[in-house]
Picture 1: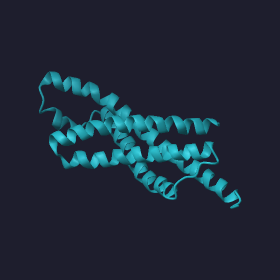
Picture 2: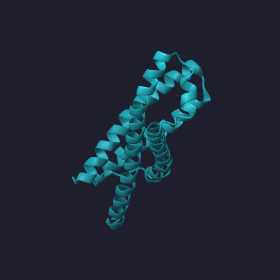
Picture 3: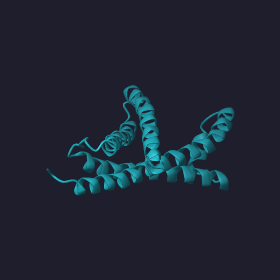
Picture 4: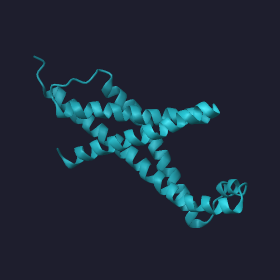
Length: 167
């Protein structure tokens, strides 16, 4: 196994753990609040989970040449991968924007929301913003990197299938 394939396997595992953990939390939040925003974010996290599961099947097919992928798996990896690139890019850019807002000291709407809380909670929230920005950047980068690697290995799998004789 190459380093790139090991990285692909590791990032897929991270995506499964990340998306499952937060998806379960969002399901609980959805049942308690009934909010449409929670449902839409849950759909995006579900796309990350589905893509990671499809990536697992791709990894198994690459490791075992006798294993056959379902006909819909390559298309699913491509389509859901596009959604995941959007979600991961959005997360990374949101984290970067928050990080830059903290560096410049211009928090804008975040500052307006924090003014609604007592002073002791405001300081705790301000201290939490930098780790949250770093978390968003890292998770967004992990998602985008995993999708990019899945596209690369999907192309490799497709090339293997084209070279194999039919009989």
